[in-house]
Amino acid sequence: MAGAPRKNNICLWPAARAGTPDREYGKHDILEIGVYSLTGSAPRSRPDASPLERREGFVRGLLERWKDEPAPLLPLLHALHERDGYLSEEALRAVAKGLRIPIADLFGTVTFYHHFSREADGLDRPRVCDGPVCSMRGAEVLMASLRAAGHDPQAMPCPGRCDQPVPVIHRGTVLTGRTASTLVRGPSPLPPAAPDGVEECVFAGIRRPGRATLAGYRDHGGYDALVRAVTGMTPGDVIDVIDASGLAGRGG
Ligand code: FES
Image 1 (tube, helix red, strand yellow):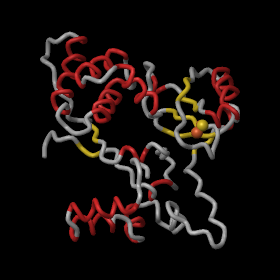
Image 2 (cartoon, helix red, strand yellow):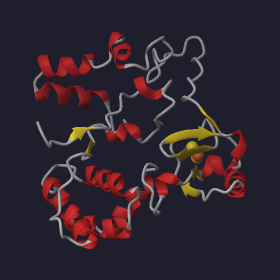
Image 3 (cartoon, protein in one colour):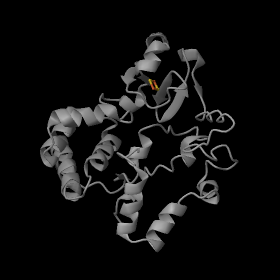
């Protein structure tokens, strides 16, 4: 449908966890299932509107479109981030007011997601993880090294690449390393195989060739449960299965 929001951030977890050098996938991605981007469908301002009016109109239009949806916050934040390259205080205040969320709560959400930059030009500046693991593994040294190389790095929260300290996101590319000159781009490494006799759960089958593609994921049972739920179960059946599984919270 013309002008409709397009799905842009569906994570094929865990199929997409490995072998994808151009995107980073981490612990937060599973929380983004169903998040929609509004790229290409932003509300338009009148031609003679001032820059401030345009910004306010854009936020108002987004709020109007999403305020009655069950979970409007992340789509709104993604749309604003894509528009500006960062989340400004002005934008956050407008979202807080429009959705009636305390600004402190909103700040907590924004700083939890490593995707979001809070500083202007955030997408053009290298963003370095300063989470606990990376802090112990040389995040400060890497920041200093980037500064010495002429960059203006900023810190970001843990993106879930703790097995590869220290991750840096720069213009959408994930790099890892300890100094500016040794940063390399590469896919998430495959996890080591479980010892004999230990059953794998989340990573079961992740080492099979082609598993990082949608076709490979489906070849090995990906989405089978979804098809079963949609075609052969009632909503009550689905709830019973989830209750019986003992899952707690979005990540289980
Ligand atoms: S602490 Fe740096 S990636 Fe997790």
